[in-house]
Length: 217
Image (cartoon, rainbow, N blue to C red; front, side, top):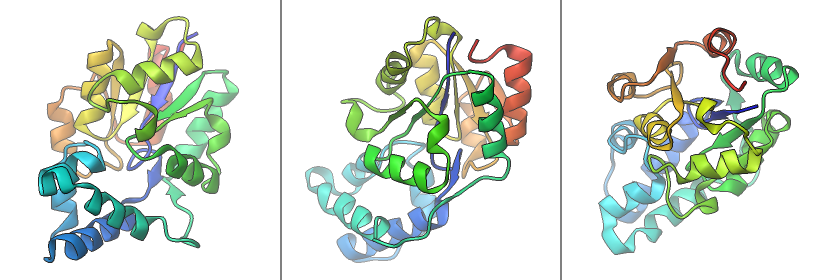
């Protein structure tokens, strides 16, 4: 048995508005000027928040990441919503006994908290976050970490579903297949330019591909 790995933001959960508000806040507070947060995040091509902060501030990057997380993880914030169709797909794959994990560049405590609040945590056997590995997507290390935790017998049969170029590159670097999740991507063209093995315009299409291609088997 192999596995299906999922990205979190813009793939499973619709968190873009809250994330962009926090990005704009951090940029204004730390750099003292407004910014188009979507364009700024798009330029990161699926990299980590730390990657972006280092680009902006160099060695002083932690001021930016701290401002972002203090704004984003405010107590009492609304629970994020899964994209339409996501839970039904996860439920079907889970019922079929396919091991699944989340591989995200978000800090693990935040990822687990949001998955639980959205009612999705029960479908995953592992969650790999930013703080679980030294290197991050597009490096294959977090993919390997997820497959190790899932005890995947045939890791070469695994697949990763994600919305960004970093997800596609991480899959290729790890020697597994990729599905471009276009339903939530903020830069579908860049994700397609990364040459995914498959594309899915809806979560339901991932389930169709899983049946056709034997994902996770």
